[in-house]
Length: 100
Image (cartoon, rainbow, N blue to C red; front, side, top):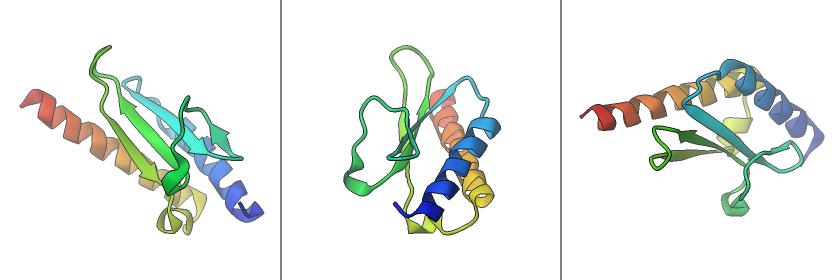
């Protein structure tokens, strides 16, 4: 991973951690050399951020945000905002299914 991209992704992790304080959403990172907080990382499609919406002990839908070149080309703050938007969208989708 090139140094500039690594610095940018480190900043993204920091910003997302600061922006996301929702206790129902668990965020795990699979970004080698930057943040590896997930127990199991499937790197076949590259680095990603995994969202887990904790509804109950047995119901925990997940979504992966793959950090493709589209996600990694803007500034770190823009990427963090995209991730935050994806989290809110994911939560709204799950809530609409849960509420009927």
